[in-house]
Length: 329
Image (cartoon, rainbow, N blue to C red; front, side, top):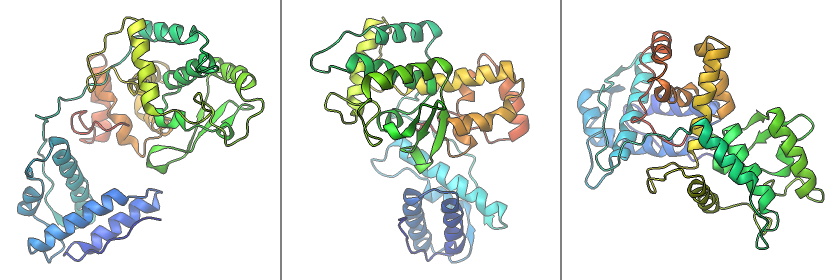
């Protein structure tokens, strides 16, 4: 059940309405509701009794706090930008800052996009793992788990929490129920991956129940993300792919970034109109809205600048920079 807060500033009514609208779309919106509680207290302290958001109030709210990381300040900035836009669209007086905050304490993160050759080497490495007495089924589980990350664009948490009952082998479809933003979705498998899933099922899950982990660890439970990360680092070393250190990548999540970018490139080549195709990719990836997928456009802008121009003309000033929001989408 979503948590409720009391709001008493001059903007309490639009705050509650905004939260209600977000939750009506299926989001818990608990973290954001707590941030709104902080904003509401700040508005009361600042003497805001009218339903308006002034420049002075906004600039005070987004000011860097003592010992605060830049990414947290950026979060508050983007948060107030979205709310200010909502207010303006609904007839309220609201100042929407154009400011962009760069990071000094966190290096701007740029996702690592694997080349086709690197992906081929990694898949070959996983497909040829040796049998281990400590993890008797590991040489079967690990290859398909990583192939699923690479070929389906799943988040690590989605893959390791996949249950046998979430896999429809008859139709070649995965139900992603443990998803970010509590947003369930269906992910179709390619013919090749689907065939591997069928073979894997007969080798691993003949006597399993629907609640069993589809990719079990040695104890038949779900993998911990650290186990996946360690396997990944080992694979990079064997495949001669340089790792620049924790926090710099490549990371396991970069398989998802690579999948998204490659999908966009393929859509542009086959469909010809990436603008109308983007919502479909957004749904496939499990993004709450189109904004999450638009972030990937910045990663292909160097090679496809015409796509950025086309989308900017279509969507206006809504495509964010990667630096402005680099959450794990």
